[in-house]
Image: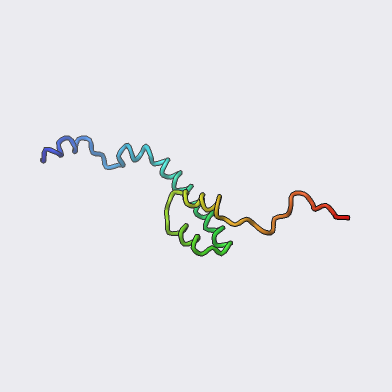
Length: 91
């Protein structure tokens, strides 16, 4: 066998290597987070008829960073929100 492969066959297991097994729960949580936040941001972009934001959010995978930026700073506010206090009548 080649010298650089020495010891490889002794430590090889047919299962996932330990570092992948150790980070597997983190990867699953990250994937679920990414899908959830992407769906929420895409829903808002489609509802507000923002075609370019919808395309950017759909194509770019940024693990939720672009989606959060859109939802916090670029999502239009709803125009049909009721005021917190009723308007006072003018005499």
